[in-house]
Length: 395
Image (cartoon, rainbow, N blue to C red):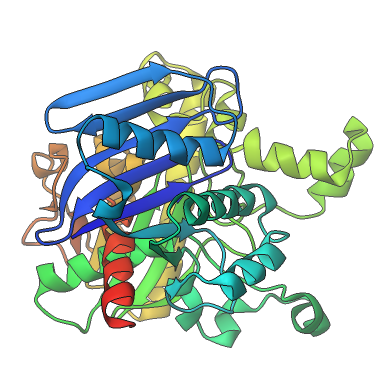
């Protein structure tokens, strides 16, 4: 039984086609730079990789390209081979605390939610509508990035702002990267051999999301009303004093949206290093003695450690800390520096084990008071599982 899992954004469309009988990936790939002159796609299947630069005008043509190519490559014989399609949806507000089958009512609600994260949500919606048109007989499921965090208590998700902002405009913390945090939580339950545990999940990539999890439920998370807040990221600032916005507006002659753009796209590792948002590039510059790159690295580590410390206290101790996401999975240096800063909590790692990547790996020593793991992110399998369960069982 084949499930197509889709993760779309404003300019890209990632996909994985699963055979759900054994949860193997039949093929996967990405369409990049949608709507730009240098659009391109990559499809990986078996031992082959197909790449091509091609004009892809919009998300409709992106998903059509994917379907046409996997048929032409004999990966599937027709679109009828696809049992269902699951979509990662970045925002479900407080309306959705679980995945849902997408119908006209859901599409209408999602249209109303586009003002919360306009760019990303528009990419999600355009892809959903394209799939409905191109696969009219196939069920669609929405898997929400915010759903996992709907277990937060009111005292944790409310901001200390006028209460009517929450009542009138739904201003509150929503959190993101919930699909991967849920995956990590389920993997940790297997690794620990129990369902009751205290976990801090550190999704470290271009986006940074730290989550406090107790017994498989999100208690608090670093990202807030939007993905801008929280720990420092690749191009996002994370938490800053909001008074900076009018101050820079006056100094630079910019409007509020332009300053918010700078906080989203020109800050973080990129802003502090004045060089790159990619941690690999930052680490190379650090080795060369670049002062700004070193400062950016130190700040990044410090902000992650700040949240781990905060959530350690919130949970009243921790059984496990997990590193996931592009940086969390691949950067031995960042993991080492974070764990060295956590020595006060009794965290100790094996430096040889810390070099391993690509699989669930325990890197803490037997003497460590907290178990530390690397768990590669896998949002796509969570999307596929939810899709299969909903379409087959209705739950």
